[in-house]
Image 1: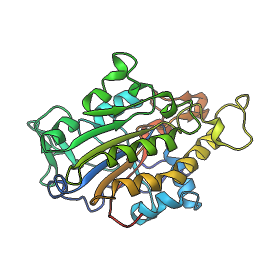
Image 2: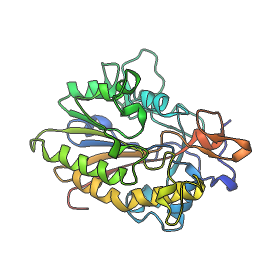
Image 3: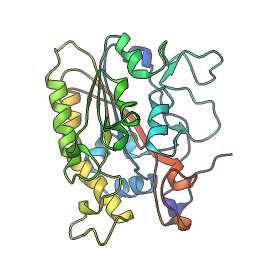
Image 4: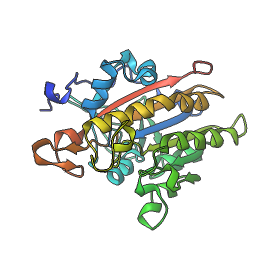
Length: 291
């Protein structure tokens, strides 16, 4: 039986997807945005939202709260490969939990009437067949296109972007990613539907430079991780504005996995620790003129 995180980890309510939308009515009518806040911990996300430190994200979180979910992968490549096959983070509590998107697969217990089903092996290909322009703005190394492995995820999209300014070592990575997203949207015809994935690298280590007064000698910590999330929140309104500038945009904001900062002696991710497997999640619709 799955239980919520204990209070020291910021544990919140378990539960299924609230008011699951009919994705068959969404796909083809809305633009689609997936924002993966790479390595974001659930407890940090909940803590900052509760303290009023995420004003832009708080505007769109249903009920002003993150949903607690479990990721299908403990590191970026595994999690994104699952996401792009339709396996988004799983709600807590007994399932099955109907999915928003699913490749056609005989016997799938999580494909329901409201699920948008595609014939292809991955979601970008399915949406491309449905008439969407698919684009990816990478962040961490699995999107850098500098080798075969770093080309797998961006290779699923018709258009993909990565350069060092967007990467983990850039103090302005998210600002640069948002500017790139604005260019992607601006280059499209008004009637062209868009599916955009933004892999946000700012929270991934190194993140010490997002905390005023910190230095590389101090290293990363839960506090610098939180400062990086605040940095993202300061600029995410521009991304929401761009993506809702032409029509309503169905949006998913989630972490791909968490990361450890010394809990039980662990540091990092790609491990089976609760702070890695438990992630914040939200989906909502951005409407034109709201931003």
